[in-house]
Length: 294
Ligand SMILES: [Fe+2]
Image (tube, rainbow, N blue to C red; front, top):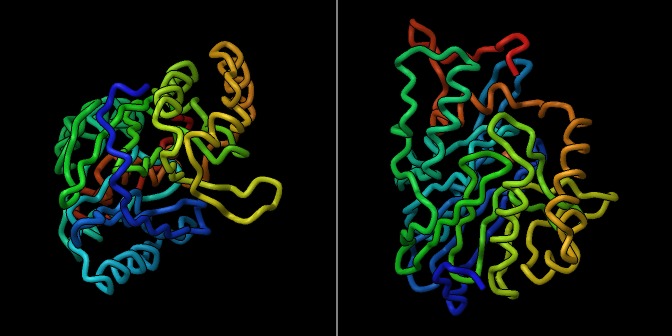
């Protein structure tokens, strides 16, 4: 049983927005007892080859929130994504709300502050975000309590956000036929990821789980919703009681074969700043490529 206080009788309305460019799913989550809502893991569009930023995906989320007359209270990042850029500040400028992430963001900022050779103006204290959550912290979307559960391993700052009977797991798990995310980025750890997955699998059987990514294995349609019971029974990497040792062996071998995500360099620089673009000394938005730095 989970040590966290979970209320499965609260059933928020969840709307997913799939981004085909990065296979990311963003969510609008509505408190069933009010017009308050949260956005989880938004996406800013980038044409990296051209250095061009656009906002079609975020605009669709903003339009949905406006059309339904909702009040945006929270803009949540489940972690510092390495494969897409967050649109949190763009959405916040349009609709308000507070941007929140796990407090281990400081570890991530320390690690990548070094890799990108950031100057002292890049704060490593998480102050770019409006709220930092520790394991077990509770915040509210309208009247709905949300429990932030630390689920590190893929990255140090990963959290699962449990809103009533819906849990947003970030990259802690994929759909049962997708398994799990890599654990080889700086600060990642396969054993830690296994332990975090067990925390998710200890949530109630009927808990709806919402993925941050889906890659449609085997050519099936894109899917992003499953349940704790489904993952426990069928997850190809951790289901049916796969042992910690077995998982570490498998995950480590698999990760050694994977290329870096296409957008890891721009993603990290933007996402460790809560979605703001870094700027050059003249104040122009500018991204770096550290050579042989990763
Ligand atoms: Fe990720």
